[in-house]
Each structure stands twice: as structure tokens, then as C-alpha cells.
Image (tube, rainbow, N blue to C red):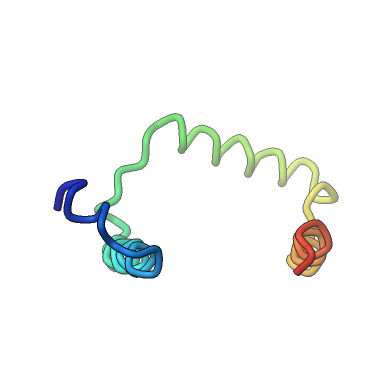
Length: 72
């Protein structure tokens, strides 16, 4: 599919295409390449969390923050 094929799609059709692509990728996560810098960043964040457990926010606090910030 080239740009000409999807540039004529409506916004809902484009969103559906994105969702379909995401679902397809998620079906085989082991096939998605992960760069070394991404692995390094995840290791850094994990180490920080293990060394500073109080720095983490609960899921409820994160949702509350996002909702208050974006009026949801």
C-alpha cells in the first residue's frame, strides 16, 4: 500500500487501518525488533525504580493526573 492508497481514506478509515496494523504487530511481538538503546533505557528505568521505589506512581494516580490535565 502506498501513500496514494491511504491518502484518500477518511479519518475513521485511517484509524481503523492503524488499529488493524497494531493488532497484527501485537499478535507476534517477538518479531518486533528492539534496538539496544531501547533495552538500555528500559534497564536504566528498572534500576531507578528498584533503587527508588517511592518514585513510582500508582495507576490510579496516573489516570487521575491525565484526566485532570486533559479534562476527561
